[in-house]
Length: 431
Image 1 (tube, rainbow, N blue to C red):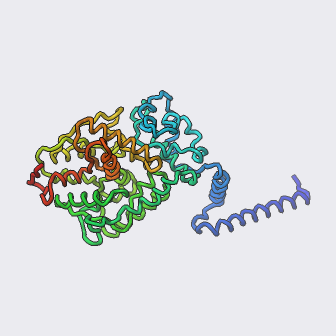
Image 2: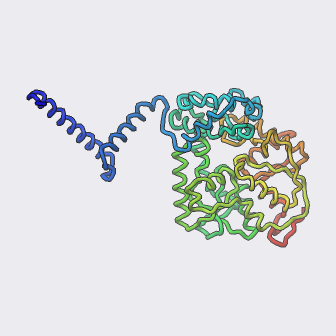
Image 3: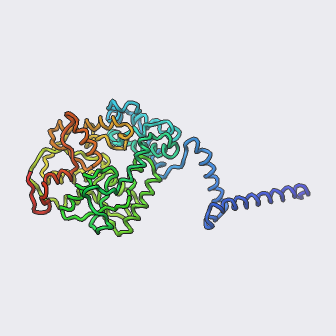
């Protein structure tokens, strides 16, 4: 077929325009991408298209999901709306939890997740105790939905995040390796040690010094990092994914710089983070402090009646609850079992999920119920490995009729051993 002159000229101009367009795109991208990324125009067009798509839909609160998050969404569709989750939710059972829609409605509305991030506060009202998951016949991952909702709020509508939660995220990690004013372990720059202790961001000086003192008595040398490095558990729990990953880089760099790869912690949030994050798992040997204590603590004479509060964050590590109970028994504690609600091994202490920062009265109400259960079981002491929960419950226990005395397991063992008494092998401490 013969082309006339005008048709040929039009096709030539079209070809020139197409070449100029491609050259312009390559030039614009060259200022933003390294040379090795220019492997084909198709990849450039795809990258530009993705950027344009994200920019266009950003005002609607839509952003990319990680692979694990995408896998979560079909699981939410398995909910049969049976209603078994709401009756066991501690937030719905508390007068201070008014306004929370409950796990059933939360899952039912998950299809509107991202746009709703601008107006919903339910992700921050949930205490993340997973009582709903224990009651669910379909094992719907409600806690995963809450985690995704929290991230959606921080990613697409940070102004909608409750200010106490934002403040908590900004300030808590700075205290991760704060040195106690009195006592406490040295830093690994000051003294090589068997284990590096990672304290929870909100552990007070008493808990930090007591934990280090117990391990030293048992002949286990410990030190802290001492340079502000933090595992990122606070950010991860609240939904600040980027900040949490930055903490991983800083902590691993601090440990590598000192050749330290054996880490011990008793904080439940830190333990879960260190044991489950793939980069930590690849480089660190992580121990719970009570695992070290159990290996060295000698039996003590029988003592008071004790209730143990198992931190709910450790629900995927049931063996640690047995380790804690074995340590308490070896220290002479007579364990009693409070009648915890539902199918949980423990009641929510009110500090899980950082919700008590947002609704303090909810945290106080849940904490009082926890103390009442322990008192009803006849416990003289309520023990936990969570220093944050200990501080919270101990403050409530000072109220009239609040409950038994509250300590961390390490603090209680030191009290049992007595001032100046050894707790190593061959030692039996008096009551």
